[in-house]
Length: 483
Ligand code: ADP
Ligand code: G6P
Image 1 (cartoon, protein in one colour):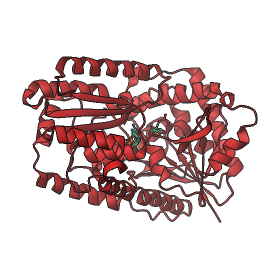
Image 2 (spheres, protein in one colour):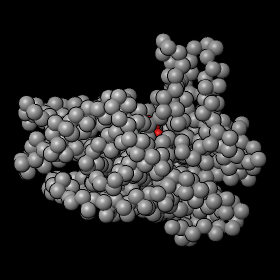
Image 3 (cartoon, helix red, strand yellow):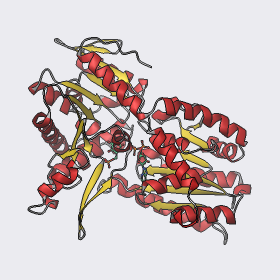
Image 4 (cartoon, protein in one colour):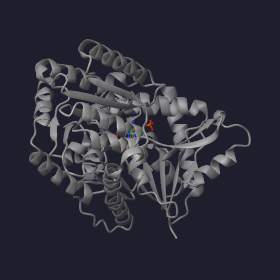
């Protein structure tokens, strides 16, 4: 029986070694949470990095690690510390990530990073070649592995290979600044189907292919000498039922069954029933616009001082890529901003911002979503933003307001949210006021549309559409109709 081989840098679990031995924690990020829901141990194998380098693994533990990963349907690619420094912290997160998110000034063009990226992509390709049978479908994910499709295709010309990019593909004017732009495009073109979250990313990619490689592009097909590659958009959904049901279950819990966080949030609601809770949840990343959001919150409180003591902003930021200098600087900036604003505005009864810098277990994430009157998500640039979709899915009584940046891929499908430009403080202050005062009926009407769409186009449908399109493309049927 043929199986699907999923391949990404990040596996759905991260392994850690501590005094207590080996442990596995769930990975954070849209790719891992989304794909986890479509990965089934018997029909797919997920190949990726365990989170440990060769140097972290004591003698004799390698087999234990293999069997721990096997329980999750995963298999590891072995990476050294140098690999991780050059490929992951280097080219992936100091070159590609900033460039593709339009932070050109943060993007570093280092030959050593590029060489490491090539070498590590080859390691991933070799791992696929070792595992994949002739009938298997190979699905490569994200910007860390853009050379892998071509590396596999070279050795297995008949392999069925799909590639999905979880981040934006930038406009040609940005992409062309990359010194290794042709190699990256050629790497991707090893795939039979290349998927993006939105039509705009797809269009940018096709334009780069045409202008940099001079290839023949017709609609969303790219013609090579001996084959045709299809490019299409597939906006990623969430596991709607998982979030919706978890929210129902959490609201039904009573007394001691409730989590500590839930109890604290309940107490807060009782002691200050008129105070609105605004939540924002992201990885601590400059693309998420967290610092700007805090500044915009201060602007709002100054413009509408009547809301002092009547709103609270909860910021949950999960530590991410903390070896990369820009992330360290951002952490410091946010610490200082929160400290300054709380210092200046707090009263005996009120702290304007609650700031948590940590990853939270799934149940607590649900508690935060369900307890918040407003979700305020302000990425300056974001491939999709699944948090926006998760918030809406957990609103079981259909109340709650989503304020979402128009720079997020998810904004294309979430028109009923209050869409804002994260650089416009005036607009955001007015939108926060609109959200705080929005009648329940209007909240429910907006969320009804949003929920219906999220339910229909969930992550399973997303994966099936991608897979069906890939299979049709490979069989030369090409019957897929873009939605
Ligand atoms: P990105 O992929 O850029 O991190 P997304 O919004 O698409 O952004 O996905 C983030 C995922 O990580 C979501 O599924 C969200 O539930 C999860 N997540 C974000 N912050 C936390 C946190 N502090 N603790 C646990 N999970 C988190
Ligand atoms: C985004 C990327 C993923 C990545 C995730 C978390 O969602 O698209 O590829 O896994 O962020 O980042 P990390 O660097 O921790 O894997």
